[in-house]
Image (cartoon, rainbow, N blue to C red; front, side, top):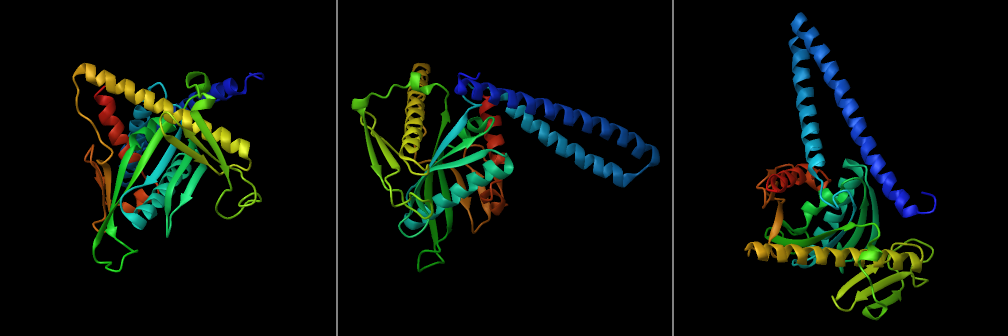
Length: 326
């Protein structure tokens, strides 16, 4: 353990996940016993208001158990891994860049407020007038990749543009999400040959930080065979940014390997359906007050709650659909 920090971190993560499961079970067991005792007392005394409260508590408990069942079924090879997420503004000009920043805030709140996950911004390129062109961040916590892989794809925003003169007309904007797992010992799996990568250094942009705009701490890594470019500028030193950029690059290359393997299996099975980048997985229609997932048909009218990070209902509906089809 002491001689292998990566192994120790992996074991510690598994231990935390098991401990979390045990604590949930003990909590549910205690609550069920308390509800049973309360139910006996309420029926004996004919306390209708208490019975109503018990019914509400049971509904809450059922929702928690339903969520846990989905967690229990997330048994993919990398579902328990941390996740690296990239957001890229698509068609829609300034509105799309604003939308990309809204998504960045949404996933940060989802990770920190709704799950207590760690959130670390790795790279961000500001928009020309507002918002961001792109951002890459790392989410650390049990099953973070298992959950977030359901968010891959195009997210569509429909609203009255605050950036155009004719504000009565609707503007449709797009932003794409890429999600890859953080895999231990990926260096031994994905070999980066020195003659296949180009590494550039530059000054970081933005405000704050002693080194910002003074020292070339930002790093851009280009993988020549695939054309993938990764930029990292949020760490304090050039070496740290280089390590993070190479980690992201390896994750992206690994994801490509997985996709090629899955595509080959589908071809062998005779499955010729393709899901292209242009198909939005979810639409957020602000003036109608509606968010709808195109894959599961699940929708909600509480748009602001979703934009504030309340995404679990969408994630669970998608996972239930995909897990039930396996």
